[in-house]
Length: 267
Image 1 (cartoon, rainbow, N blue to C red):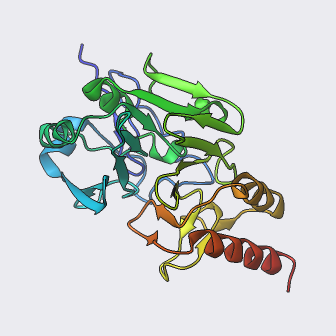
Image 2 (cartoon, helix red, strand yellow; image 1 turned 180 degrees about the vertical axis):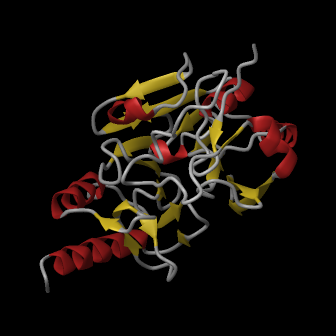
């Protein structure tokens, strides 16, 4: 009898080992995501390793974007943040192969993996085992975990301190535990996943309950996001898809929130 950790091809999330694939992916069988018109399909990590490779790109001093080519799943980017106290992997991608492990080890490895929301849970247990890393996930989103393990730390409340002033902040909105990572280095940076989605113009952002199904968030959720960020000082926002606001990001987020609220109210 052979068991595999099956991976949903639509979202890239890996599930507990089983003899047969699950009937459906709970993450995709939800209004925030979708099961493709061809129906539910599955793969495993070894097959992904053969068909895809990862790019590791330096985008800032001590910040590297990690993404897969050709695109797989949701096609988000992970970000490796190097710090004196240890490296952080912000969000995660599904493909993990020997080349990726070797390069990241040369960059100092990974001390902690922090994930913004369930759509990016991907193969977090594989990454944690490869680098002996802890995984930080907000407890509000624990029901969506495809795999569980001792590496996972379920944090609660509004914020979770890591080290050197780096912290995770629960904004809610996209998911109840949807979070961002705050890096106080320099003028400050927010790594937002798509809790805060950077727009293609690179000077505004937006917020959605579901991006693929184009379902907006209500006013209450936007106000919660606004309140969770109001005390942060930051110059840049790093989104999940290679879109970054490099300057005046706090002003851009504030403008975008006000604009969103006005549209909701019919102005």
